Image (cartoon, rainbow, N blue to C red; front, side):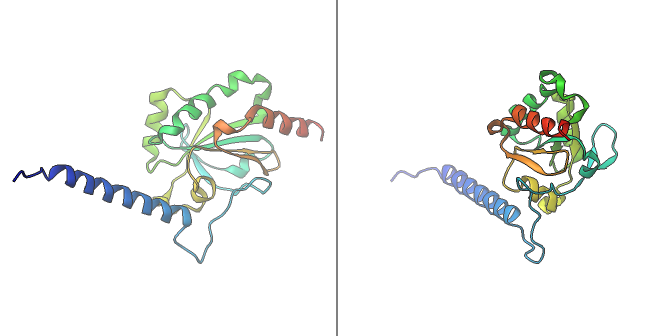
Length: 191
């Protein structure tokens, strides 16, 4: 009788457990554990939920509401997120590609990494300094603002008008960012 090695079965069992736990944690984070306080929502056509972030260049805390009056392109990402890397690299080109935006547009890259230093180190390594780089503490997956903006997954991008209303939202690769910004800036100039 030939005996089959038990190691492959053990590896498959370990992988199954790992992925099951990962999926369960994701479901809990996305659905929210606290039913008494429903999560905030960030939806197109509604006011952008105000949150405070740490500016990674200065270390100062800033509220999203302090950017009111500008068009804000807010991209939520993390250093460990492989699908976030290409959109973040593209975001670094927006300023050079659209000099007409000037100071009227704020490019805000919001990291949801567990640790601020992880985001900062990744940005430095990549040389991504053409955006205002921010960190939003995910508080172990319980930050209501992370859930509101990035609870369905990252990368995700929000284009917020000068009035604080979310004009567009979705995966950065699916949005026509230049057209949305042009439209919002044209609306500002008509006032």
